[in-house]
Length: 175
Image 1 (spheres, one colour):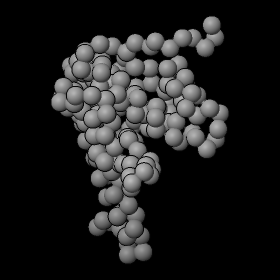
Image 2 (cartoon, helix red, strand yellow):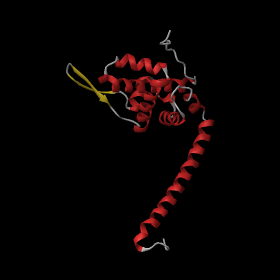
Image 3 (cartoon, rainbow, N blue to C red):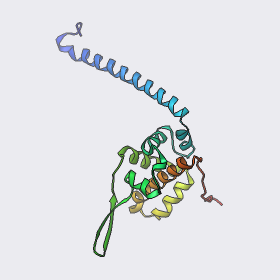
Image 4 (cartoon, rainbow, N blue to C red):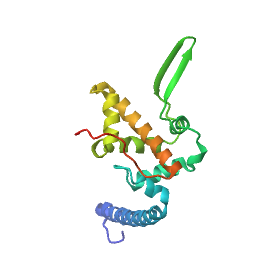
């Protein structure tokens, strides 16, 4: 900064900003390495990584959000906890289901939706659920992907609860 002339002061400031950015990248890399070590030792994260399309970070988000899988009695509680159930409005004989409630962790919901999109390519179970709900209609794509995300969360909860790896019971589409 002392070497910069008045009209080139921005170069010195840019250099300082780039140095701080490099320091932040190094810190981020150190944190990521620590998380990798923790994930390799955590059996729940390893268990969820057996799902085709689910990586380490998604598994970490799910394990962190669900914490103790035995605190939920059924799949409805897990889905409601994550905010992946439709909002229900009743009045007299009228019963309307709206958008999802969005209660719970936004990070969990967004991670589940992102992994649901990825699973359509790598996981026959997810593709069959998506196709069954979507039915080829373009207007139902988002509804179908939210349903896949909710079903994935429920299966993750069951896997963590029973300590069993991913089992794909979907019949092959080519057979």
